[in-house]
Length: 503
Image 1 (cartoon, rainbow, N blue to C red):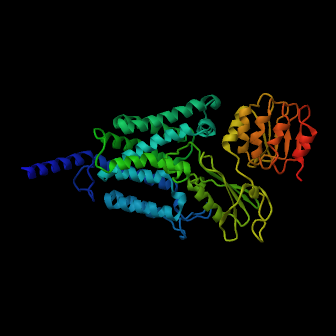
Image 2 (image 1 turned 30 degrees about the vertical axis):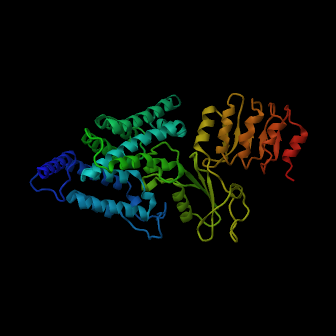
Image 3 (image 1 turned 120 degrees about the vertical axis):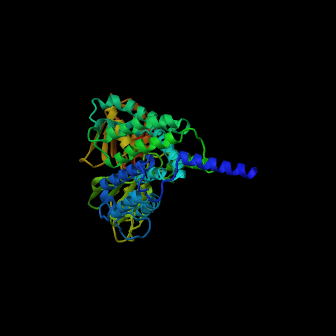
């Protein structure tokens, strides 16, 4: 009797699994109709093909931007191999999908520029259409992606600043200054809400994710922003296949003992982004723009490390990939500044050695032109200006000067109307500043503290202010400060001489 009961329970379990997410056959039955899962798999394969086609140059060998192999690997083109695996998926789903995953991973080992979330996200959505376990994995992938996309935006000053303003302005919306903050808050809350629903009310999320992703597609389409076309097929698949995944998950909280570990992994892994352990593309950092950026000072000018162009994707801005790009594109003696806006990580500075390895250096050495490498004089390093700082100062009406378009900001001028003490905190984000004008403002001694981080500061205007000798004390260690205008202040001649004396 117990044996029969055990068999009955086993049959019931198998029926339940088959009802939730049965596997596709290895080959299509000749006389059967295309099921929902088969149709969704074909749709996912078509979206992946469209994404690869849009980014075709990414999958080839290139010189600019160079391929970034994980190991010492020769350049290799993977475009047609990836397309072939998608054809295989359409004919023999299980083995074809295994081959497709294998090729995606190998292609990324040959070139880390291919570590873009849309390719791997689409592969995971297709996996959910083939294997029962894939359904659970994909459900929690969706929940984590939406949750963290919203959380990262809520935590990002860059999203509530230049990033959302740029998007609103690019979409051609009138008066972006008035609308970018409501837009930023709405997007973040919607993504976070859909992520929460995916955890506790999957069918609500199944409905809500459709207009959310269609809205993203509209925003990125030629009708509005006309930007980042490579993620449009991914968003379409997230709306269609993602909705089916969540609808199929209704009525079940956890399936199997391994799923709590899966949930914990998906939800906790994005935390690694804040300490540089997890790439931003796989941690839900989508459009929040709080990512590292790299600027190379070359013998013949500046070069910012970006993607786009023929490859159709942004550069994967990670500290290691920025350094790899530098080692493959720069010449000995040239320098790299990695500006990292994350709270727990500091900026990095490098010079390229004769062996084409990036050598870490300190900040004063970066800004100096004295030779660091024997036989090859180093350039005078130029650091990356913070978009966050530029945006804050622009919004306040502060005047900023640069020698020409694309060059760093070298001077900032405040007036009575534009000066606010909190804006002084933005100045260290402009590390190439040589002149700061504060004449006639309400600046006080304590407001000058951020200026101590401006290594290249050479001139400071303090006429007609309330700054005293005490304020100058904070600037004593600036090596290039040569001129301070201080008429009609309480600054003594002795304090001024002491500050400007470099003996």
